[in-house]
Length: 155
Image (cartoon, rainbow, N blue to C red; front, side, top):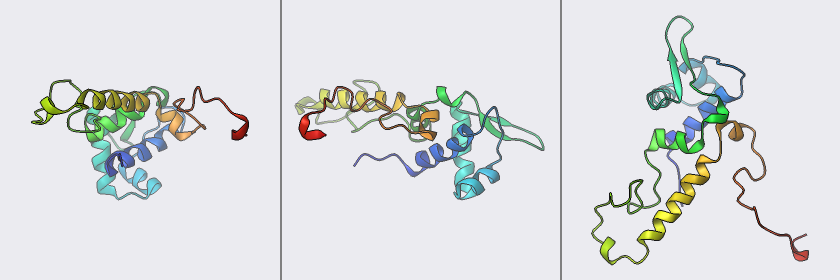
């Protein structure tokens, strides 16, 4: 099973609250912890990572907190996952930079190039789904079923 980390999952949950409100609303870590029912230490950690990656802006002061650095339509699920988990790779032999692996099996592996193709396909699919789309999901946001023709047996 391919899974994102719990931190990345929480990051998408937290960012979803920003995306659901109009304009540059600022939330404190405490407010987001209450809204999401995620522990304050985890929310604080996720917010700092998202700010370090540039997806959130930190606002100081009495009414400070965090706000989205860009509109939710311009933030992709792929960016969020990379911010929390690092480069998206299905296997160790499918790094973001080809030939960046030190796998001892690579010279003998007949499928290493295919892993990179699959890795690219997954990364591209995640980059086609915006945070805005995640908060208002549609039946097929990435076109996974594009080209599927209905046959009489399917209806």
